Image (cartoon, rainbow, N blue to C red; front, side):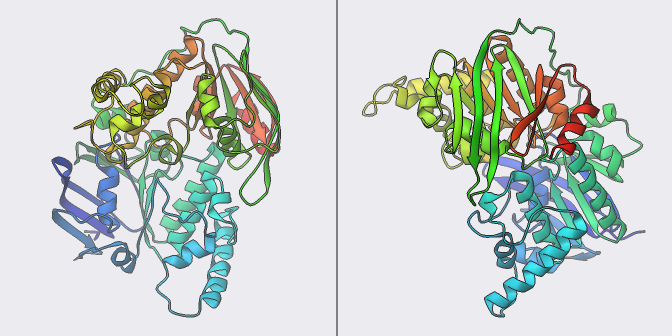
Length: 503
């Protein structure tokens, strides 16, 4: 019998009254990619956080190469050559890539000599993996995909042989994801044990050897990834088939509502990443922006949210006028709402309660009374109504911190707040990133419902499937500007060519 590189047996973990893991089992062998599937909140990340030393299990056993181990923390996990790339990155934004990697080093040599050695290792490993990130890039100047590259480099340079990848392709384009997973396959072929936490069933069948499905904190099945049909994997994950949202109810497209003209923005390092972007989004349509990550998508979304200044150009909403340099408050007053790619950086405050996160925007407007006499009862009533309407699960109390919600339910809470006020313009940046099939479907349904109610929806996503399934028109962004436009139904190959050939 082959001894697993990493095995977890009957692991239990509770957070207060919430049982996150209820006797979960998992094992991965060297030389294989073992996928871990399940809905948001099924326990996947909790189980892998136990394996990475971040959570201490209440009970159960952990073995590395057949020997029982106690993982008292991330340092202990690294000592057993276990490395995890988290869905929500563990990086210091103001440090460079090399400085972040050096933070995990146990070396006691001089800082500068260590830093130079790490920079050489990064350069070498990045060339092997065909990564674009450079050692001296500051994290806050990188795109989300480039930050993920930094996380992967950190784990590999740290000597990990058991790799836990939590949603590694969520922010990558088709081409980037396939290239990355081909690299992961090569790492496995060279003896690494790879755990692949994902919601993308196609990638599981194309790249994984085995797949374990979790539900309600338990492991419910382990099967051959390639031999199991996608429909069966879906049934195992959620216990039923998922009906995809219909686009047939679309109303007629109205007049232009959001106008972006020659918009220019720079990253924190001064690089002009958005360089003359121009497009129009009409009322009653979804305008999708597709492109290889790092071509100005993040800067565009942040400029439209009012959190990044523009170097030039204009942003206008019909009937309101210019919103180019007015800030988030003015944007929201004009009927714009935002679903950011990083929900906890710009969308939700993890340490605040569910009711505080839902109502915070309306407190300023006076909806719940004055600053001096807030109607807490009305706040609770509206929040409860919203979480029921948007099917936000896992809320045990309205005073519960939003950080304790799973990714899908946190996103539903954000949608409830942003879409519940019937916005005129919606800016949605990677709205289904890291979500399971059911939660992703719910997000898409809400965006289409808003579109059919007359909203102008701007969808920015590196997930080409998401762009193709929701968009009425598609713009391809490259080098910070729109280089091609397509009407739905659009040819995937033509869009892919425009993305790659102009990048």
